[in-house]
Image: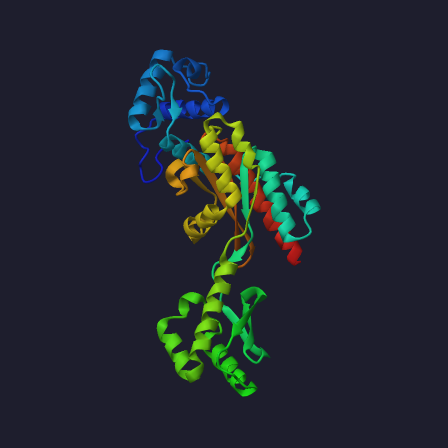
Length: 354
């Protein structure tokens, strides 16, 4: 396994150091205890003395790949060490098909049930916390608008977005309008706004629109606000979580204050939604990604790792799957599980379309 990843950042590691680092990480993943040279010397493929291993561990510590939490204690991986382990691991893994696909099909007739089952199965399979978002378009556009009078001072606004998402809004009017005015507003609104997303509705366009409707410009402002609100609502990710209490199984996360903050994050979900929307919505983050410690912006997750993957319901419609655990999580198992899941979801969605 080569160590010259990330533009040569890790070329400083020779094969022996790399093997010792991998042995330290694997041992720590299994035990959760600092790892000493005597433990590493028992690895038969290394065939090195404790003294030699101690020297190499000192070098690894100076390079920032491992740290010594207490004087006279063994070493544990640093975030940099985990990063090397994860990147080299992910390069060598191939997708495999498991029995999860059958479980998912049997337990889910509708997408919502399916995704809830995905979250539960991931939590059970990995013994960590899982999260799954409902799929959504990268950006929503106005497909069609329709105004109709329901009372003398009230209009019903029907907003149709791409994928036939329909939103209904009640618009209060201070000016009375007859059917001819309502018809004109429908024509003008659809002429100017059809096919546009919220980012394309700029000040210049809004001014042109208001110039066309004259005295009804205040109503148009209200309509534009409702369109923006509808697009924002549909763009908000809905998140299913499962296995939140699994974090209590890991001593480094079971401290009362840490556990309370994490459980609140999983339950309240606002920070998770911001995380998915802001940091992980870019196209470059659609493969399997691993975020270690401070690589996530959520303070309560600084002692955790998050592994995410993106599934595609159909072209342009994406959702996110994530697994949250301690930094010593079994990355190999988690990555493999998510790879398998992406294959299974792809098969399921294709079968449903057929």
